Image (cartoon, rainbow, N blue to C red; front, side, top):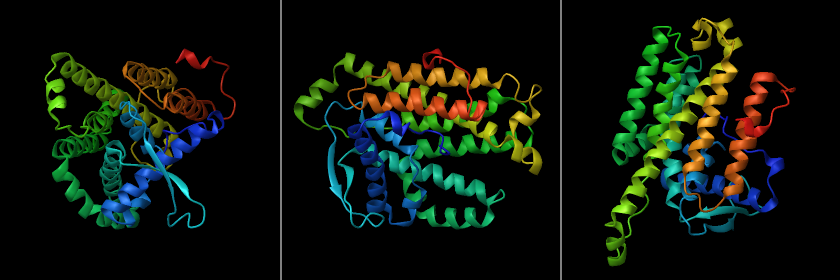
Length: 302
């Protein structure tokens, strides 16, 4: 997710920060255990948001243990264990990282992209068998986005929505482990619960779509000057109004993200999730739009 989905560390208490870091380390450990050490290098903090959201739909408390790792051989760090949402987030990170390396391979970072895609190819082949629908949607969306770039599309809506479909597939593709007990079988046949599950999936998809649109437009805005100098594609370059009025669209996407999160039945980590939505994403948006001196707006205006 390109490093835009972050927390505001100063606004979290010590317990919340420890939990947030435990999810980060949990994803890292999960990747290393199942795919080896190199794929762990693709880890970034923004994938924690996916793990947090999906894990927080479960009402049971997460299991946290303190462990050593290669990067922290002396001090033990908190790690989330036995959480399928953390494993899923790790899988999705590698899917996105593989395609990001492939994009680099065809762009200005050919050496990094060639090496990265080669090192993740085996993991991606396994993941494409485990998540064929997600990988197919991601591949199709990226191919369409590549075509729009070749056509020098001036449609910010179309390009951002195309990338949005990537994260839509990721967010709605999570399937919690099935409980095979007799009681669970009876409960799962309840039509109200089935409807709730389907509703949650739709809301997660909407969240992924809105987040994808926001990330894509943020990246376009962030790279605007460099892309203009280098001649690389950027929809804002071809947009009739350029960057004029783009803040309204970005804040609309940000508002859609918060609305989708509000519709989810979050059972834990509320403070951390709120921090990401209202503090982290908002601060990152303001910084890109206005630099160090954003206008005096109420954060709830989003």
